[in-house]
Every structure is written in structure tokens, then in C-alpha cells.
Amino acid sequence: MSEGVDISKELELAEKALRDGDRYSIAQLITLFEDSRPVAFDKRDAVIRFFQESGRSHRATFSGITGTPGAGKSTLVGELALRFAAADAKVRVAVLAVDPSSEVSGGSLLGDRTRVRFPVDEHRLYFRSQASDRELGGISRTTFSVCRLLYHLFDHVLIETVGIGQNEIEVQHIADRVYLVLQPLAGDQIQFMKAGIMEIPDAFVINKSDQTEPARKTYYSLKASLGFVRPGEDHLPIFRVSALTGLGLDDLSADMQANRHRLLAADAGGVRSDAELYRKEVFYFEKWVRDEYGRHGLRRLVAMGGSGNYMDQHGGFDLARRQFAQLF
Image (cartoon, rainbow, N blue to C red):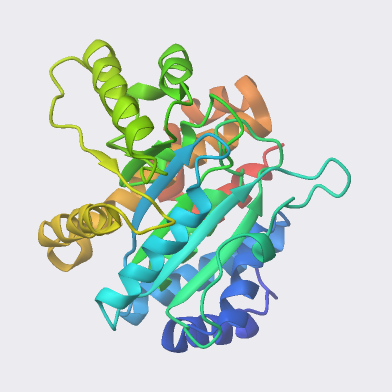
């Protein structure tokens, strides 16, 4: 850590966020994890180390929710989060929703007020919107950084992608399980086949299935499309749900919770979860180098042993980024 960096405020926020689920503290920490200034690298590193040494990390499971605009992703995500909280009095759930960016301000166009609404007094549920920064891939350039924070504070994190087209595959590098949300008779699966997106999801969700006949036709059309794109994968789940009426939400919620239970059962002492997070850090460190410094930066990184080696030698994800930036 750089000398003279005061981290007392950040550690106080970290304690309140971890102990009480304090929304103000979480919001302040998220702002820190979105900050691109050099001093923020040191502060983020201190916060992460505090969580790791506390023995109280929640080690979140990440579910990616992607799909086209109008499919009802936001309503669906909100209903699922409420069900997770109702099913377990100890669970903490966060929703990270990526929105289109305003051409004027650069901020999120939709934001909290028009999205998911949680009970004011329920501190186990947390919602945060992010502007996409006009990034391709469906998520923001800081989404992974924020997820590193949420990993320690929550048990389940739902990541809703921006939903602007056919390039929403970046979430697969963060989420433990990806769900593609479709709506009846929209023809989305044909466009997704062209873009290669049908090869990404672990499960499919046909929302608005209270429209019984259109949903049935979409279900069989989707089955046929999957038979062409992913032959031999007959086990892929397809959920017919309605966020409006609650149809099928119990099954979808159970699938997400079962995935978390499977991961926890195979995770002695959090070793697997921490190792998986480290793998993601290696991927996103290299992506950061590529985005910021291009091919020249990548060549220098390879010459120094690659992402994992460089991170290990320079104190981890954040401190390694600060150190690498000083080379340019």
C-alpha cells in the first residue's frame, strides 16, 4: 500500500456493511469500487483484505440474467430476490442492474426509481444500478470490480445485463450460472442464434408465460432451436414463468438456490469460491490491460509472466493494476 493513504473511513464502512448490511455504507463502498483514481486502488485492496481476514465473508453466488428489452427482466429479478429472502431469514441478496447510459450525462437512464422496489426496512435486500458506459457485452467496465465487493457482503447476487442487443455475453465471465430471458413469440432465439448467444446460457426463461398459447409455441420453437445449436444438450432447463402472476417462479427460484447449494457443498472452507474469484480476477486484469493499453500493454504483460504471475508478484488485483499503470 502507498504511504500516507488513510483507509480508516473505508474500513469503518466495510465493518458496518458486513455486520449490519447498512445501505449507506454499501453505497459508499460501491462508489469506491467504481472509482478509477489511483488512490482508490489502495483503498479497495484494504477493504478486500479486511473482508478476507474477518472470517465473515458471505462468498456470494452470482446469477446472470440477460435478454432483450421488454422481456421483463427487472420485474423478474425483483420477484426472485424477494423469494430468496423469504425462503431463508439469514440470506442477503443484491441486485446489480446495468442500464443504458445517458448520452447527455453519461449516467444510468433508468436507475433505482423505475426498477426493483424492495421494502425500506429490509436490509437483507439491496439494489444498485450501473450505467453501461456504452460498453458492449451487456455490463459496465466496473461491474466486475463491484462484484468483488458484493462477493463478501451477500449470499446471492443477481446481475441484470443492459438488454440492448445481441452482444450480451460478457456476464458469462462473472456469473456462476447464466439465464437467458425471452418473451413469447418475439423471435429472439433466431437473432440470438445468429449472434452465438444461444451457446452461452445454462438455462432459459420464457417470461410472460401467463400468455399460455404464445408461451407454448415459443417453448417448442426454443426446443427446436436448441436442438440445432446445441445438439446433445437435452438437459438444458427451460422455465415458463410469469413475473406478474408468479407462475413458475418457485421452480426458477429453486434452480438458482440449488445451484448455490451445489457450489457450497463442493466448497470446503470457501477454498473453491475464493479460487474461482481469483480466476475471474486474472481474466479481468488481462481485459483491463487490453482495454487501457492495447496490444502494447498485452505484450508487456506477457513478457512479465502473464496476468496471474503479475498479480501474485504485486499484491493482488488492485495493487497490481496500480503498479502496471505506472509503467506507462
